[in-house]
Image 1 (cartoon, rainbow, N blue to C red):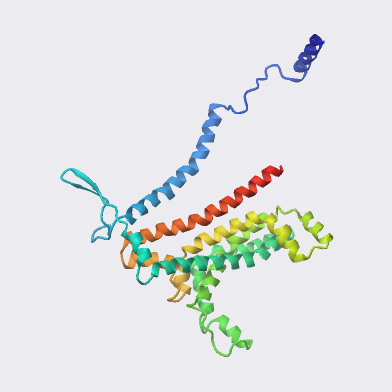
Image 2 (spheres, rainbow, N blue to C red):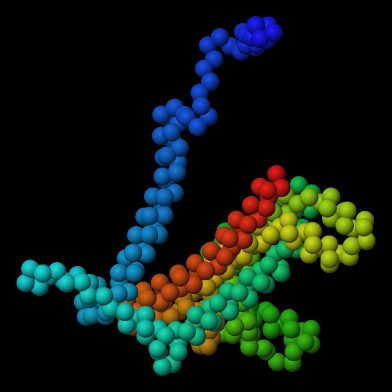
Length: 330
């Protein structure tokens, strides 16, 4: 019995397997492929080291010094006196941010978070219907809609902001239309207000919300929506129970692409916002170029980066849990 089974197996092996086939372990590869894999992985690491970690280390070093009348305008951390090396670290820049009598820095942080959060919400509120229209449109019409969404980004960022300044001033087109329709009897102050800042940020960052949402909507299983509709589920409940969970990754990605740069925005608050629109980007500009206080400005920037890490870690954990659920189902 054993002899017959062995002979059958040997016949199958000779008939269906090549004579010179060598089966290598799956985890082993050729030296060339291993080198290529290592090079591909190394490139993004080098990019992060050169353009993130090195500048971050330089800024962190400057934040631990004090202002000095020199070039560059801060004291060195390492000095040599009588053959001895001295390292002096100053933490008063960080403590001053929290102990400032006027509370300028804390208010600027809170104001920046408020503006970024509301701008992200409005971008999501406006961008979701646009992404839905793109995902459900015919291919020919979809290309036209894509052009309408992306084309404004081809124009200079500053030029677009100046265009909004022209539209929102007291004798601009917006006030002319409002007065012509009888909505207002006299020109409304729109420019140099928080409303103008929100309009500018939402306008400029809306494409960054639309594109991730469109990518997520293209992967939606529309049979679930049809099934919910056939079972008598209301449209709003269908939207929140079937569509939102399937596009959560696009919502998170788009929100991060809008929220993170909106916190440090400088150009829009400077040109469209008023004096009360003191965001962290304007504080950094004033400390660097007006006050020439580089150590304090670097400390403000370091704290802003720490604040930005919090939503990144939060969104990363959400994505990781979603991926684990998907892997468990499969």
